[in-house]
Length: 292
Image 1 (cartoon, rainbow, N blue to C red):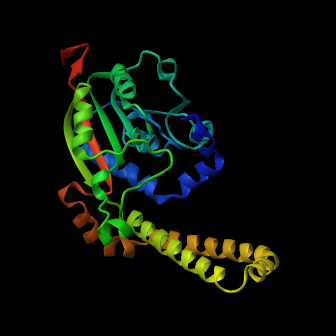
Image 2 (image 1 turned 135 degrees about the vertical axis):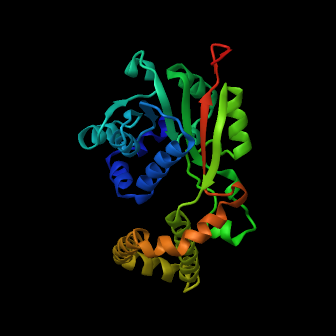
């Protein structure tokens, strides 16, 4: 989706590297790979971002390569991470040549695609016989509009460039229709995701309340005059408050105390396939119309 390509610039790269979620997600992906048993010697991470998963796979003995449409992310990965990285936006075969991979990973990618069919057929073309596909994507089953836990503390992870959101059944059906055999389907929830959503909801609620009070504080002319006089100061104060809040929140995210306190609620949230993230490992079972 080229209309969103400008969002994945150097600022986005810096944010990705600061976000602990991405490192935890990569570690969890490696754990799932080891748990489900695909013993791949090489791997391709599509939509690799700043190369966090590729770097971790290489550190665990897998020859991993990363591709992403963000030139800023690839430039950063090539200078700081282990592995090989390429800019690719629909020209993947030209980048990797005839090499085949035992594992292809796509974390937080498939929900961005308007039509995932060509993507999955392309994955089949670059997988070796019996190769595996690892998918992580937001889980539609985690959202329950009448649940305080789901609506405020968890809830579905949405973004302007998300096109299709999957549940376990719909993701499995789609992968099977393209010749993949499901080997593992599970969901998981990571503590700061819940805490961050709760924080954002509270901040938005407070902002709406303050805005309503300002609008009823006086006549329109008085409010306009007051706003014009104090707007620069208010913006500076608002920016400073946000910066302090983000710094405090980051320290909370990285604390072991938070992880300990939310461990049990996170595990409870995963019951009945309602974790925030959906993770699937599938094996290529059909190739050129024949079974492997």
